[in-house]
Image (tube, rainbow, N blue to C red; front, side, top):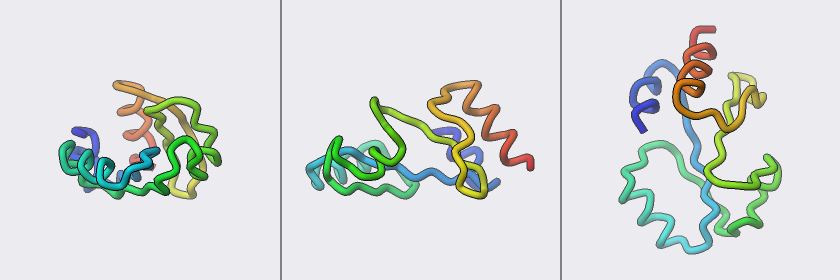
Length: 91
C-alpha cells in the first residue's frame, strides 16, 4: 500500500486483521501481496472477536485510530483517507 510507504516514517502504523480460517492461505496472501505491516488473525473467520468488537459487517473495513486509540474515522478510501491521515499526523 503506497500510503503506508509514504507515511510510515511519519508515524502511520497499520495492523491488518484477517478473517481467514486457514493459516497457510492467510500467510500465503501476506507474502503474495508483500504486506510489510503487522498482521493478526484468530483464524475464526467472521467469528473473530476483533471483528465483533469493532462491529465489522463487510470487508475490507478500515478504522482510523488517533494516538490515544480512539476511533476517529471509519471506512475512508482514497483522498478522504489520505486527508485524515495527514490531519492526524500533523498534530
